[in-house]
Image (cartoon, rainbow, N blue to C red; front, side, top):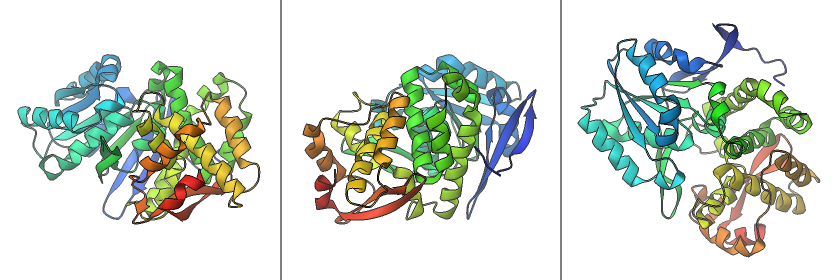
Length: 369
């Protein structure tokens, strides 16, 4: 699946640790991917952080599973470690949670020479990253993603944000981590629906940039085969994102490709108040709907919507929604971050593995879906 790609490898016992380096205009940082890497988090933090105080930000679910492992590992190396636990759930990705974090950071007397470690899924990474970006005008932070959707996507690239009632991720920043540590072992505790949620983002990467990955997913025989290849799948998705982010850190052009399915997906999440569909499920529906229309308009190769639908079904992801919700979805899209004045940048596929930006007038979006 990786073709002629060469991994940078360190050792973790009998396993291997894959390394990707993100090189931006003003910053470089490594991404390490390997089974058991959570146990080595302290040593990796030592390589990039010379301070004494670390604050772990996590949520109620992840803290019970992995909070003490990370805290104990850091403390054994002499760090003073505090923990801030936020409530799990998309509804808590808001100003109230952010304010609680700020107050805790002040209580702990955190300064700009200290560090935040985000331990959790995409929600934790986004909120903790935004807190790091804005507290005292910015302090260092590390991402340790614990969900598949965070490991393949949201922990890399520096997008951090919170939600408003009016829409998802409307208040945020671009603020890169100093380090990303990805441990596929942590995925073993995910509920199947949450794991499938992340597979929607994997499918997204295959659709926009890697036809070989799409075909491999299409032909996979069983869960064991998938599980055995997770580290390589994560690596490939992170590699694609790294390449795109290095060319367009601020989401002005090529990085928009990463939003395939997200314009409709975010609107679906909002219409259903973040209750009926997970993020990945909403994006899955978005990818299929947008491909149906782009195929009909002659923007995409014939048959891609059907193939996407079949792959989504394979991973127990939805692909359609009652047409009665289309008007509400269209209305919510007017608050999408990718809107530019009276226009909206939609991501469509020329073919599987090749996405591009299609610009339409916002008033035409209802007809587009």
